[in-house]
Length: 105
Image 1 (spheres, rainbow, N blue to C red):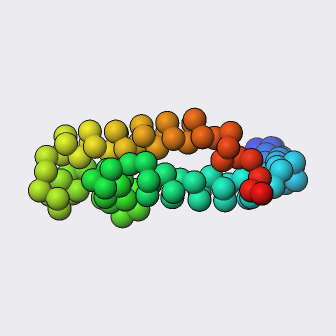
Image 2: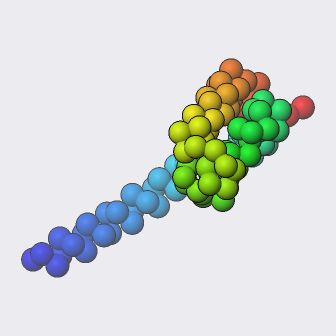
């Protein structure tokens, strides 16, 4: 009996996954615009130091201690700089989101 329930559960999960995939609208163009604008914001809207630390943290997946050792600064300074850079990026993307999400002309 438990085996039947398990199969039904798996079948149900597979059906739901197929349904979600079928119902999801294609947002690849919108995501592409967001990615391009995030790269532009990284280049233009954060300080060089913030950009360096954000890239080490997110792209190279170093932790704050490792970044601090690499750059010769304290771990707390790294954490503070990353948070400030994230805040700048969030502000840029939030306030520019309407323009960013419009189709390019």
